[in-house]
Length: 349
Image (tube, rainbow, N blue to C red; front, side, top):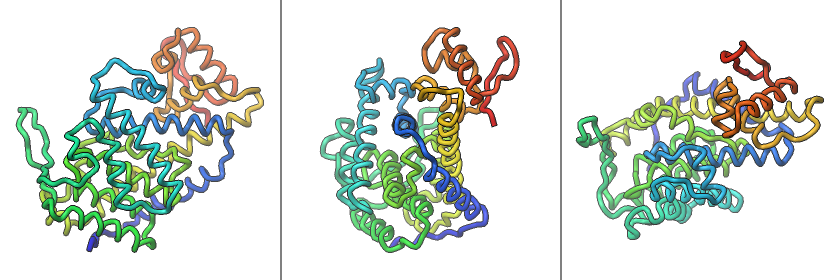
């Protein structure tokens, strides 16, 4: 039986309390459907971009957006396919979450089949691995460094069933802690020949949706992992083989996971509150258009923006970018700092 060893430290407890407060704010916030739709769409793009980036995909967010809209960017075909697969898998996550309160083994295999479709040998798609696998790092010299040896192939089906039973039988554990422990154990089992990271992150997201910790489907945990991939992998790496990981203390991993959750939850709150405030502004007689929402999204994420940033984000002339920023400043959403080339815009407190 899966019996994870961990402690709920004061830091983890405090972060969970902050997340609960943010969840209440996000749940109560009133947004026009068009704005909520924009936030959800932006989250989908970021999820697909960051989760595939972790695995080495080099497409940027603009190219991912183009794929979502049915276009085809100039890029390696396999990388385009990876993103398409992930976007399709995210839609399946939504569908499963709407249909049932918990996922089963069949759902795991369905998601894997979509994630890895046409990318590996067909015989390894949507089935648990039947060969040994190894997790390696590629060193600067080009040589492979063995990092982790997952459990034997014969144990995989049993370990997955055991993990799903643990999820079902431990509903008294906080859903975020459950999600973190599931994510860790799924990657430890490494049930597939390829696509374990993407499948594990999708299933973690699905668990959060099914337990009501979805933050209006705008939470992008993958973005936190992608900003420091080394820290993400090191936090997961608690032993060089399955037996050593089985006995590992997972407090450090949970501290990392919950801190990341809080970080991304705060971003969702800021985006939603900004759009809510915008809706109450007397200076704005209409709903923000998509370009203006992108500016706000960038500001909430980065904390500051320049006209040059707007030119890059929206691919518009500098004069048009300045006009858009001025309009948001007049709406009392942004505050201007500096003059000339040094001008930056910040969110108004």
